[in-house]
Length: 350
Image (tube, rainbow, N blue to C red):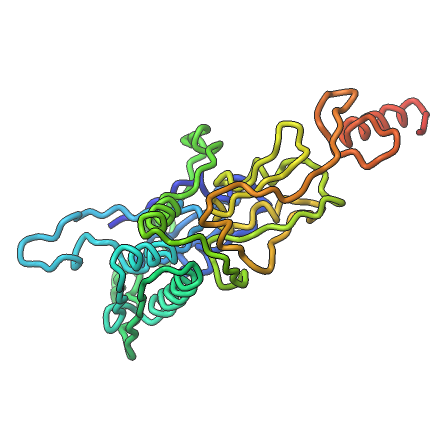
């Protein structure tokens, strides 16, 4: 089983302003960091224990686990070898299993380390809250165990003692080279530009929406507090401070945000939002904020809902649309700054 990463879908590559730290914070061994090229995600595979927590936590599903043994050999039970680790199950995956089976029991007793148990228990609780709020007739339970085994050591260690190798290292360290630990790191020469520009919800989101439709869940009217739903959000827009720059739209990894061609209306599709917060991170005036409650009806309807309308004009210089705040302004902010700079160079002021 090997860990891989699609950097093009990672929000840290779409914008350095992105504050997402989901994979780093959930990793129980500290194997994941942001010290790759251009502050991208890097994984020290010598510390990775293949628990799968990063796979289930990444909002854009950028992490994947490739299974070397897709089917168990003769004599082994299904799931003992080559099956996905339970840590890879996200909140949405758990909701899909519950919707498909009606009654789903997640048994973590004596099979998962305490760190994995804690994360999976939290995910199961979030899935249960969501399913109950949308009115799904399902049962999702979790069985926890006490004294479960700890996480395994990342790499087997050997007792060296006073070996000849250690003795030589004291005197001629330059002559002894250690094999560097395996590392998962982005290669900037192999990035796919088309994939980097794509804006699609991750596969797990499509599975959840399909499962809700198959279960014929009625359109819910319930609203949940934002902190109870980790995989989507609702948005609020302050039209008085929004500049219609559309940066939130272009950096959204899933296409949840959209804008009209003339940039006079911002729309939001909650069913495509993965709550990565990139749109909030890149909004300089902080006009786009996360609502305190999530409208689950917007999520299940899979429709674009307008967040607000703006007064927009076309720049007389470059033709680009810009937010008009009144008065006789006929230039966008960029052209206005260039005009002021040109005037200052020749000694004129507005």
